Image 1 (cartoon, rainbow, N blue to C red):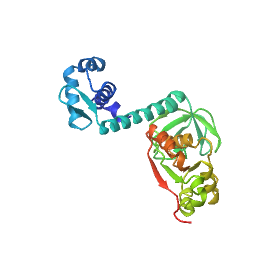
Image 2: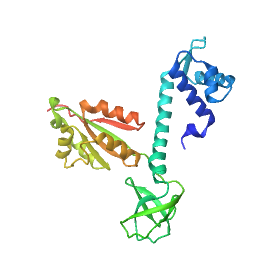
Image 3: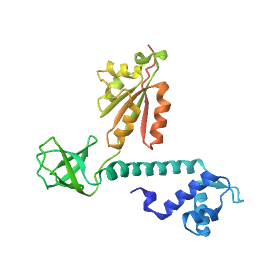
Length: 264
């Protein structure tokens, strides 16, 4: 559960900050109070907190503006809500009755099995110490897909890490100006490798690594991260801005490295 849904205080602060951002510099506290179902006095206290925390500034005449820190807090909270709603829509609502998993071993119908995510895929087995469990709806041999219902517990899933490696455009030397040793090291330890730009693809080929994705590498990075798979996206410099904008819009964390090699 995301933090702002667990706390009435954080939820109210989030909604009030949204109202301030939408209507700044004028904030009609009475109207906000009616929308949120609280008293104007409560809104006033929340606004004072936001000002004290540096998320909002005021000129002392009931005129308010969000600060840079306030915008960043809003973006982080909104991204957290977006990830949660995405999980609800894609992983719960659409699979509320039966989940599809891969059988790690031979399974019988009606068995309660453990469920774990590996490499972005859901596996069913008899391992101990795993919180999430379900019941198989038919028998399956090891390696087959199996339907699982009656899910209990939470399936552990850490968000995948994204490494963005920038390479020069062809006018600046392209793959000839790439630090291939560093690229080879990066490509050897990432689960999914994508390329954005011909220069990026050729640089990967020079270190013996065909990209897993060329067309649609941005979306693959996002989907991989949501399924717990880390990725390396080798990207030509002129496409870096659009890639980072996409990752930031999804609230995903990334590391940016410059692989341009100085000299001949």
